[in-house]
Length: 502
Image (cartoon, rainbow, N blue to C red; front, side, top):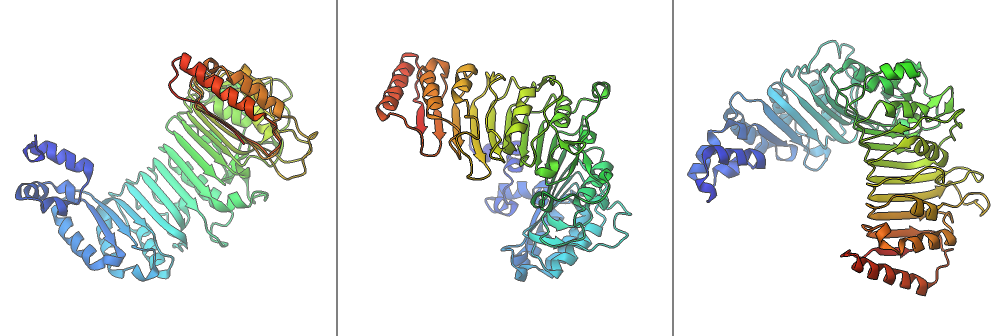
């Protein structure tokens, strides 16, 4: 069957999925032209290029009447990010079309007075149909909105908001029905939101009760990690308050977090969260209890998130957490499949993974750091590496300086982990060290255990990288690779495990 013989309904359905240029479709043949002209939805997406203003204006004039009464989807692109390509004619056309748009995306906005004035008008323009708004600039543009901004709801239907590099009082935005927002604030100067971005994000979160996805990135909070933010803690974000059944995704980068440790009774009475994705990045997101670092607040959050599948914890390295006064109860994460830690203090990692039970973990990427010559970098021997579904295990061990001596840290127990864990699904094992955290004896013991492929039948990559102090006999290593290959063939394993020791 040729495409020309397809029923009209099926042909239109294909066009809606492929999203081709309707002008190109209508120029193929008379039948395709008739179909295109009789299908208004094909003409609802209008792309405006500032560097091609005449063509863009003509295109819009051709598309709009053919879209009929349907909502429009408007995209404005600055062709090369140059100030010279920001068109006042495209400004006016955009503002004329905006009230009947369901979505508006403006990318590569140049940093100049003209674009600033345009954006200020956009945010004050009533857009009753607008459901998606995306504003993206490669620089940082600060908008000076009037004091009356926020007194009216200009975006009553807005559901999705993406802001990159645009600075304005986010908490005053008249959009109380948001379900998803992604805001990146990266002003490189003292702006109107200096040390107040967290307050604005908190206000936005509090007013939008139907949120599904919350993403906020504050570069100033990430870069100035050792400061104490002024103002009352009430303006900061309490993670427990966001554990609503409707919220599925939370990502805070450089956003100060207020942590609480609810008592056993309140924890039982707390609603179960629908959270599936959690990312916390920066020292200002670390959990503290009475000015002391503690993982207990994090564990109380995780206990309310049985549906969590992805956990990312970045740059939690500033202080060593206090040891628990009593043994912690295990926190079971039945759906957690991926955990990534980056620049995490070794003791935080140890306490966290001692308390967690993750039966369905598929990927663990742990970058563990020590920030003092007397602090050990190690993975504890007393907790079980029982991850039967784990396929990827990457461990990166590093320190803060080059002053470590062989007596200042405990060696990484690679052989214990390999021999005591359950690795029936493991495909990729990598251990990288900045210092001599893995001894020659540990590596030899681990490799001897892995000589038998039945213990790790799916292992494809074994990569151990340390400073040049490992002393392995080349002939022994070659024989080990050969023995594993021969045994793999006898077990019907078709692939060869690549073993790299560097």
